[in-house]
Length: 320
Image 1 (cartoon, rainbow, N blue to C red):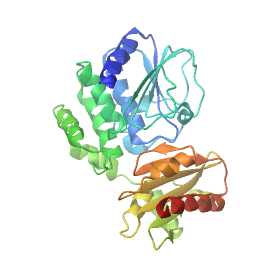
Image 2 (spheres, rainbow, N blue to C red; image 1 turned 90 degrees about the horizontal axis):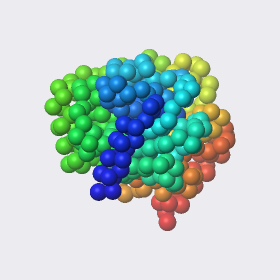
Image 3 (cartoon, rainbow, N blue to C red; image 1 turned 45 degrees about the vertical axis):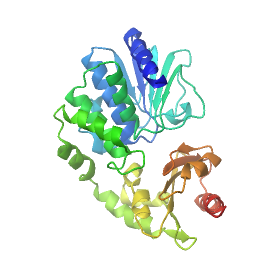
Image 4 (tube, rainbow, N blue to C red; image 1 turned 180 degrees about the horizontal axis):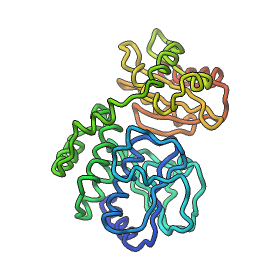
């Protein structure tokens, strides 16, 4: 009920703004970008001035079929009076400091450590931020165009791992059913997301798999990326993020930790199944996420020490 009130306040802020900055998180995934592009399509159709910002110069190519993807910018506008953070549980995820004197809105399905925005719309029971954004349109009686619906469906589909995560529920499928009324082609979207892998990725995956190490009779698995492999294959690192789910598909594995160096820090992604809550482990390293998917960053480039530290933390959690 509280969020329904906040959705109304969010729309008022949008209507009163002169120039809106839509902010997505660094190392972007489809949910943050699809949500921003959904809102961008709505604002464009409403003739409201705005810009979608992401600090990265390398964006997931598999999303290039979404309308207004080519409008995403890695440079900030000179002027904006409203900031909308999408899928950014905290300001650090943006990768750059923004003007804190401006009005701001945060809409996210991750637990935030602090309510940094003027309006914070958070619901950790939702499959994705895109699903939350759908509720924004619904609560304000706003029409969702086909272009907009494609963005929302893409965010929900990808972040729910094709509707397979525990957060996928009856409401998720009700949202998808409503989006289908916009005549979106789900087969086309699925093909764009799943059937355009690069040759570089196929050269990189075997290298990552060779780094596989198992602990606790195979219940815990780790994989990592060495920087030299990126140069050898020419891969764009985000292309390999699904390797963590590949390893989790092994029958004996219950927890996976995936390590790679980004911006002179080790980025760690955790995945789990059954009743293992990796968000608890992530929180120990000041990270965030959900029960079965979480992550954090450690300010070091030492992969070996980081792996040892993380594995020890996982073992302590499981054996407690």
